[in-house]
Length: 142
Image 1 (tube, rainbow, N blue to C red):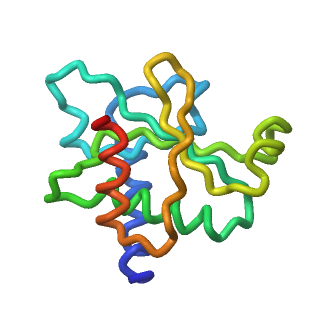
Image 2: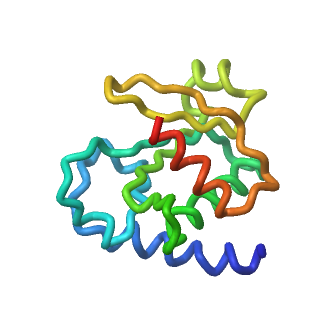
């Protein structure tokens, strides 16, 4: 399974680099995890955005990041995450984030329409990519 996830990661980077939309300079740290087919949506739906609070050397954070990228790339399910925007935030760069999340990372938060964040329940590191895709998708269906 680890080999399968590793094989998907280079493709995730390629999708992000090849994304056709221009990015503002302030969003340089944002990772857009969107397949080209998901970009051409005719509905003006609000973007689905998640923030992953992490820090360097956190193996749980790295594992969740890999599974989230794999879940975005997983096609052929009713729980598509093709339009998901994932932003990573290093808690060591902000004292407030470090105070809030130093013992909790990885922390996943949903960005609401007004810009505030809703902290999501922790995802088990043992969840399959398919279950992570389903759980993340269900957060946006509420």
